[in-house]
Amino acid sequence: MKQSHQTTLRAAVTLVGIGVHSGDEVKMILHPAEVNHGIAFLRTGLPGGLDRLIDARHLTVTATELCTVIGDRESGAVATIEHLMAALTGLGIDNVLVEIDGPEVPILDGSSAPFIDAIDQVGIAVQNATRRYLKVLKPVRVTQGRAFAELLPNERAFRLDVEIDFPTPVIGRQRKAVDLSPSVFRRDISRARTFGFMRDVEKLWGAGFALGASLENTVAIGDDGIMNPEGLRYSDEFVRHKLLDAVGDLSLAGLPLLGTYRSYCGGHRLNFSVLEALFSSRSNYAIVDAIPRRETGYAEVSSAAMTAFAPEVH
Image 1: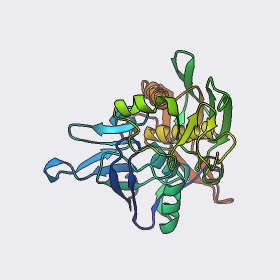
Image 2: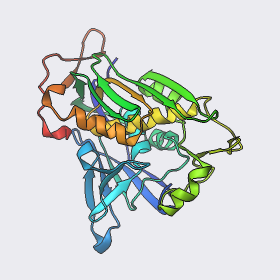
Image 3: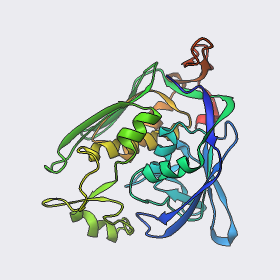
């Protein structure tokens, strides 16, 4: 069952926390937005009292090292957007203005769960506008060494099939596949936390990353196992977090996807690259409307949809 109408928040909600890489405190307000607004970030607190509006689209991505960054350092950027974007996409929320006074979305507990809790405080409003989908028409694939990511046609859903393979028995080889829906995202994906290896910490600090990382927001992997006293939230939390990241990164298509995403040993760079490959040709995708069927109230995708030349998805 596909969502037939666009949605937004019923009211604004505020979150405060530190950035996992910057270590700086940031305040973020999620505002309701009008139909066809999409997700956009209003970066405030810039030099000279300036603000900058940055659309959450793949064309605004400027970095994918360890996190996804939109905007640019000179005129204003927002980093580590993927966990928030995953929460909004996972819950089927189309239109939100994210006001943020710092350079990085707060990490909170390292998952999407705190964002969902905040959204639940105000609720989701159904809007009087048909939802549109980005339908994958042809397979596209990108590779990086042994790693790959691909998007395949899927008429009925947005399916993610993610596999990881780490040369450590703490993680090893894990695979998880889901058809994305709000209930599946809440139950199976949202609570999976970001993770990292203790042996990499000093290197990351030297490069200016992970300055706000702690056992409160990161699953830390040591030589002998998990360092966090509470252990894992899921037995395969690592692959579930990679799946969460993929949901957030692929939301930068600008519209909810109809297709199957498959990756092996992927990450932010490959997630972004497969979107670039998708948008490299108009023959790869189409924009379709969700049309409710009167007899059931379910939503189906119109085959008479407009073809995808629209600049709004870039």
